[in-house]
Length: 83
Length: 375
Image 1 (cartoon, rainbow over the protein chains, first blue to last red):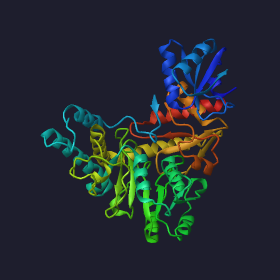
Image 2 (tube, chains in turn green, red; image 1 turned 30 degrees about the horizontal axis):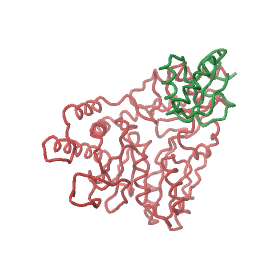
Image 3 (cartoon, rainbow over the protein chains, first blue to last red; image 1 turned 120 degrees about the vertical axis):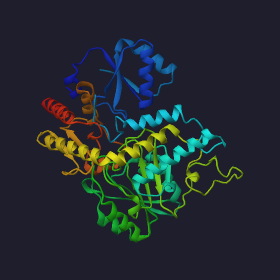
Image 4 (cartoon, helix red, strand yellow; image 1 turned 135 degrees about the vertical axis):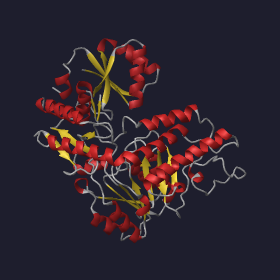
């Protein structure tokens, strides 16, 4: 269990979006908020190889909608992971 | 939020800073140096006063101070302005990317770059003396490391470099405001500084000190409000390096900050250092905390790790669950982390400054204990 999870009990059915830079991460956070999708900036768990140390956690049920928004708004991202 | 990230930028800013910025927006509206009207002249007078305030703090003449948007721009101006293909430059492995990235770009243009070792974060002065036996155009070193807080003996290093015939560029991003830096009394040729860290000025401000007799190639060219009949860049300072409309609110805020630090700086520095030193002492009692950098602090920052935890994750935990702002990661200094063996984990950096109190030390220590209990 990661240090983060010891303080924040793990919630089921979450997905993690990893963007390519902080600029794109904040763009994505704003975009999701504007579309009523609840999200939270969280540290990227160890084991996921990325240059970004923070990701955006959101309900995995929203994954298709999030993917569409990312494409539509050209948000540079490295991937979406199921947690 | 308890703010312990002063090494990234100080917060809050000193009250005269935002008063000066407000005045710049509401009462001093003209474009300095442009047009013959009174509002432009008044803006110019205010910028001159700010330049004098900064110069006085650094112990140099006002004409030798060039304003930039940050230390990074000042370093770029110095490095690209001095170094030509075939030149040799010496630096160290604890430098920030604001030095290492311009040097990597210059290396591709034919500049020879030597990076000196800094075992454990401390510059090896013998290695520097050895490196200077070879003809060198410039030495660039940070006065205080933004990762470990280690400092170099500035006067000794500057003397050594001067006696070799090379120029010396000091990066004083982490020391200005915390350590006395009287550039006029040292054989320092160029010094890059931020307005927004130890000076308590606005973000997006900084500058470069250029010793008399040194001429740089400008980084940007354009209108200066002077010599407008010529398409050639003027040679006169500060115009040569300050093309385009300046950041009037930022610069006036910076001037007020320099004045504030000149009057209260030693008191702020002393208090910040005492808090940081006490925090270091208390952390040293926690078995699972590894501390990097000197035992006796010179600047109020401490880099640590908690067990094997990723530093960014610890920083997010401190922010989210303890409302403590610190910086995790590599702090834009990858070689420094390679030097101290933390290139994968990074470090959690606690940096103290203006406004911090004894209660902040207590809260940060209690949070550290809670984190250790979870390891």
